[in-house]
Length: 253
Ligand SMILES: Nc1ncnc2c1ncn2[C@@H]1O[C@H](COP(=O)(O)OP(=O)(O)OP(=O)(O)O)[C@@H](O)[C@H]1O
Image (cartoon, rainbow, N blue to C red; front, side):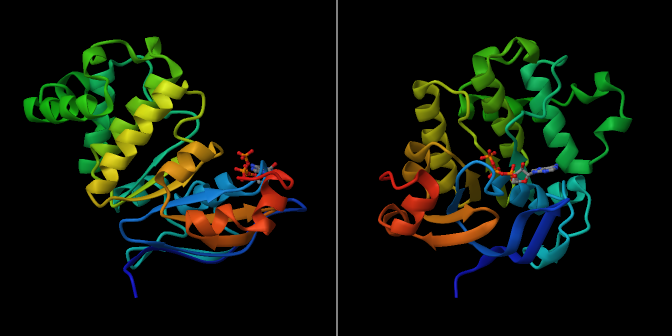
């Protein structure tokens, strides 16, 4: 059997009377790019939030690399090697681009960046060098000294990706990484995510844009109304009539 990095077992989650996730069982294999797709309200973000500790499941468990994540705080999960990029970037708008990447590295390193004076944090030349290397990787190096608040939406998302990559996670969770980007920026992000794949990093991507999904995914799970309705390779999913019906009302993927 392939090496399983993340194992989601029998997860249920309701909001009041609404069953957002019903008996979800999902296994993410090492090195894969695993896409989770489905129509609006299918439960994709809820699933991701359960995985990173932002939402407790009502029942069930999430195990990463042999360690139970359920019940842990998001920062603990991050320190175990799980990083995530959300639809709304988690960045410090008052700091520069490179300082944001440095803070992300420190957060992973000791989890205590909040308790140090900011000035002393930014004097580590090795750290700055590594942060600049990451910014080059995502195409933001020339903007390293810009105030983050001045960045476009697409650049903020790329910055958040650099903040994740500097943590060298084993598992990277991406919630619509190209939402709001132009086609040009989307294609640059696809290229970047392909390069990360070459480094063996496991990724879970929630995405509506089928161009992104079919460019990147090795494996696809389809959710509808909180239930997994199909799983398989992109070719399996493309030809699956149940998916076409549930996901796109019968249109072809
Ligand atoms: N905090 C919450 N409180 C109440 N209901 C919620 C909450 N979060 C999500 N829901 C509901 O749970 C269901 C699943 O939502 P979720 O955001 O996980 O879907 P999604 O597949 O990510 O949708 P989208 O593609 O639109 O982002 C929806 O009906 C949503 O309205």
